[in-house]
Image (cartoon, rainbow, N blue to C red; front, side, top):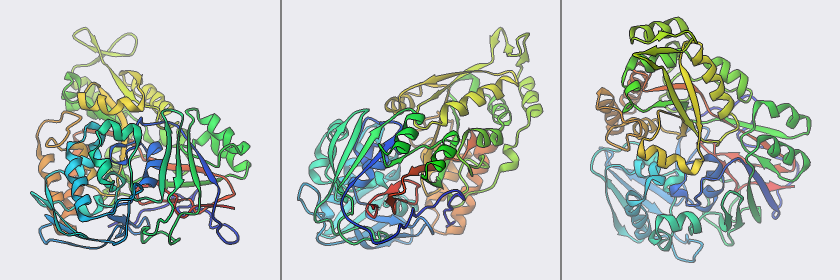
Length: 518
């Protein structure tokens, strides 16, 4: 498993600070968007994950430096040789914020319920694909079984998407969980949620079962966390400079100099998983033609986009996976800018340049719409550059803005030409989640050799064989232009000097148990 790297311009461990850590205080964090849900099992947007991750603990944790899976709610575990059965020994004494204890029965209730959740729980459901059930061996031993080998599940057990919630929370409807929140066993509890305004959390008194990666034993340092929804990047930057907030997300390149000048610390880490790119809906006639998809990919100048729009150190995509993802394969040569080749492919497909420079065929313009949500300040300028780059080879692009809360509905209905987005996960099985025709199949792909590769890697009990299959899957996706990878997401935060030990987890989200102000 590859090491997850840090950007040169930031630190994954935050500022260690001077002096001893002190308890108390409120951390105010400004993020750009609200997913419209505060249930960790149903949230997919980083801006909301930052807060909801603090509500739940997971069975395991993943070391961001090595990728190793380590204990959290589970003290130990065993995995059957064929990777179909995972047996977890739970820590005794763990309770949820509603006062009920963690037991193997609660783990079973959580995993039994996940497949019945709606489209919001796409990630959680994909991690449990092929789930056969959970056996309660005893109060503190849960045996999770799958119908076929599922090598990715141990890493999945470390994610927020499979964070464990109380029995009462699991029994709520998915919508109730989104709007009212859940009872987790995490270091913080939900105090209030005002959609599109704020999410407030309070320290969990008596918390004593933190991840083995946490520095501090017992309760968190901070008394309160407040996440303010501030959609405009410039307003977030100004709020941090003026001291109205203590940290901000989605720092853009244009804001770096001002923040550094104000003494703000910039922390950055490249996200593992599927990079930002264009996912094509292959049920649309235009994108059934592989030549069109390939031409679009070849016409994109990834280096220009990464260097013009994104924070310092951001890398252009060199595969469908980022370079920090285990089993990443460098396919940069296949993703190099080649406008001449793009034009040739469009010619072959019968699309000829018109007097306005836009190509046409049988009287129809070569045009499509990219659907996107404002979850990062870099999204709009990135897409405007892509719009210009594609126009240069005769492709007319319209940009369609939707709110992040609508994104999953759009995906479920396949109501788009092309989607702009990424998915963060520190395991290459994110490829199966995204592109298997046996799962959600958002992009309406036809069955192909890719399915065999994706199914093969999740069933492989030999790490070397799994890595080989993952590499072949990446190559297939890039060569057939299932997606046009563009740029790696690098999470960059602005953090005030007084905030210490605000750290990234293995998926480049934040962990605030060890964070203190002083």
